[in-house]
Amino acid sequence: MEPIMYRKEGRILFTLLSTVALFIFYALYVYNRDVKGNPEILNDLHFWGKTFIIMVPVGVVFMILMHIVYAILKKIITNQEMETRTDEMDKLIELKALRGSHWIFSIGFMLAMGSQALRMETWVMFAVLIGSGLLSSLAEGIIQIYLYRKGV
Image (cartoon, rainbow, N blue to C red; front, side, top):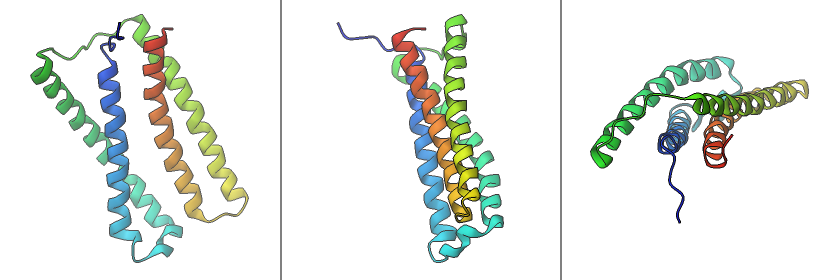
């Protein structure tokens, strides 16, 4: 018998794919706009500050829009409403996934600071921070799917 997808796994998978798509498109946009003809800008703190400050609200708005799109698509395809209630198992899974995500980002943060302690270029620190943020976000979703499948 084929395993049934848990009611929240589809939303988690959609969020994972949206996160990867956002990261790829934003990275390509920044690269083509700022870095392509001017690689020395990678060591400019103003560039990194501006890139992070713009990335946060763009990411938030994009993810809100993606959740709206997911809800509409789910309603059209399955004729089901989005599941909004959470039980104790959902909360426990979210908590465990958040803990794992926190550890991954914390390790990434320490690696980023270590790159500066080793006198590496400034861009290395920011690349490690961005990478650890992306990895921690992906890990949170993967851990949630794993725990829904395995059980807590």
